[in-house]
Image (cartoon, rainbow, N blue to C red; front, side, top):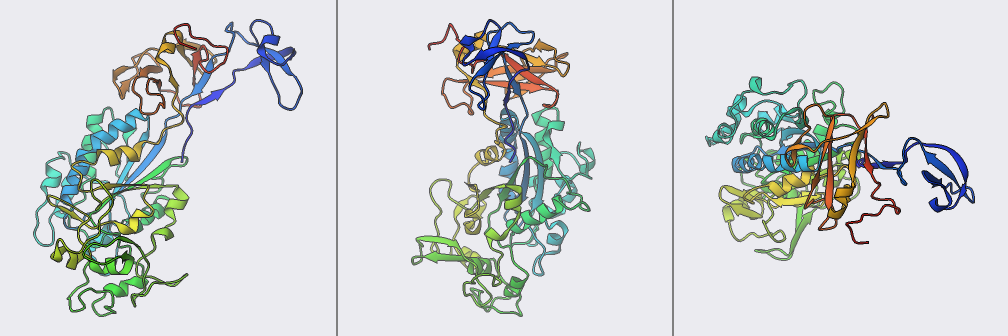
Length: 494
C-alpha cells in the first residue's frame, strides 16, 4: 500500500568550516552535521538563512485509494443498494478529510456459471460504467418484483449525461468540482439491480476484476494504480458461493445431489453453498460457531490439493498481489458476534441452509462465513446506514499527520518552496473543512484542523495542506522547525 506522505528532508548546506559534536560547537548560522562513520561532525552554514535551525521541509503527497465495490444484484438486494447510495456522502467527506485521491469502480457479485441467468455472463468481474437509468430492466426480478425506484429515486442522469469516460470504467473523484456532483454520479453508477444470479460469488468476482485490471486488452486495464491502496468493498446478503469448475456438478440436477438439503428439489438452492462450504460446531437450533470448510462432491472435507466444490477463500491471489483490504457489508448483527441458528425461519433455512445472520425490514441476510476469515473489516448489512463501513474503506492516511500543540501555532509560518528555490507564504484555505479551496492566485493553502482524528493527542492540531503542484516539484517549509530540540515556544509549557 502507498504509505508515502510527509517526508522530512535536510535543507542544502554550504561547505564545512570546523569539527563539532553538537551545534553548540559551531558559530551563529552554523549547524553540526554528524556522520556516523567518523568520530566528529563538521560545522556547516545554511545558505541564505539566518534561523538558528533550518525550517522543516515537508513534501505532501495524498494517498491514492482505489475502491472496487462488489455489489450483490441478486433477489432482495434493492434495500441494501439504497442504503449504500445514501452513505456515499459520508465516504466522500472522509476521503477529503484524509486527503485520499479516490478512484471508484463497481461491479456485480455475479460470476458466470452454467446454472446462473445470462446476465451473470455479461459482467463476470467487468466494472459497470453506465447509469442505472439505462439498465432499468436489471431492477425487475424474475418473479416480477419491481425495484426500479432504487435507481430512479436517486439518479437523474443517463450515461450520456454523466461526466464520465466510458472507455475508462471507473471514476476519479478528484475530477469533480464538489461533493454534490461526485455523489450524484456515484448514485447513478452504484445501484446494480436485482436480476442477477441468486448464488453470489464476490470473491471470484474480485479475482476476475483483478485479472482484467492487469490485462492490456481489457477496458479495465489500469484500474488499480501502482503504489496505491486497493480496497474491495463487498455488499451482499448472501454467503460467498465462488464455485470451482469441478464444483459445477454439485449444482447440476442431473449430477451428484449429496450436498442438496432436499435431493427431491427441481433445482439447486443456495443451501448447497452452505453445505459445500461451512461446518458448524454444537447442536441446532443455535450452533456454538461456524467456520469455512472445503468439501468435495461427496460431502467429505478435501485434503491438500484435492479439488473442492467452492474455491477456498485463501486461494484467491488478488489479495496477495494487490495488498488489498477487504471490507464486507453482510449478514452479521449490528452489534455483537455472528449468530448461527436454524430455529427462527424454517423457510429461509430450507433455502439457504441456515437462518438469517441479521434481519431488518426487507433485508434478511445469510452469515458471510466464508468471507469472515479474510475480511479486514465486517459491517452489518442490516445497519440503517453504511457510513462507518465506507469511511473505513477510504481512510488510508498518506503518512503520519503533522500535528502540533495549539500553543505552537502562533509562532509557525508556512511557506511553499517553488522548483526554482524561491519561497513565499501561503494563504489560509477557503471553504468548509474538509472541502477546502485554494484562493485565487495561489498555488497552495493551509488550515489548522482541531479535533483531528489522525492526531494521537486529544488537544493536538493537525496541519492540513492543499497544493496544485505535484509533490515532485514543490515542498512546504515550516519555520521555525517545531521538531528541532533548539526550538522553543514562549506560549507553551516545556
